Image (tube, rainbow, N blue to C red; front, side):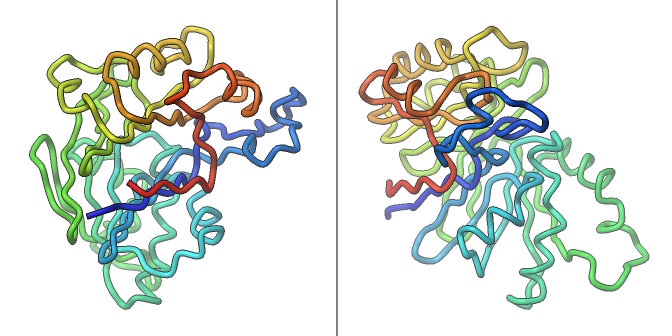
Length: 255
């Protein structure tokens, strides 16, 4: 069974261009340098899920003309990955169904705090209707999509990556335990975060991400969660090994 993966966003927490920044990346006319907050859409012939709903979620759905969504899956609770959850109410109205939301216990606690009105016992008319489903380390299934969690660290914060078929998505990480790396070896496609060139407390740098790809040996790798500090898309792409490319918003992969 093949899957289609769409980069809804490939940018870091502040997006690119950065507010009030006049650098050459933020002022670039190359559309590949316009990066909304990181998220992907995963589709089969029967099932469509999104991983993370950042602040740009509405804009991303409109751009991709998404009219049906079967579930939301969260990697972690940072605002640039959950802030758009309210937008699922459009699917409540259009598809006449509640939205299944898959999250760890920790992330569910954050969702209930950040979106208290959704989970309040006193329901205000028109709020999003969601059903929470908990996962941790065990493989789970949404429709005909089988999802294997991958445990990574974003400095000290636990974050979930996901392996689907022979594809994996890892965002917001700077450490992957050896036992989790075993899940990621010899993939067809790996999407991995590569924030910038300079060292960072909680994200892989460009060089660190390249070295990890060399270790894991996927057939193809794409980098995401990219900062304006990394450089222009076209120039950075030319520096990368032949099996690695920068992702960009709207890029679609058939795996």
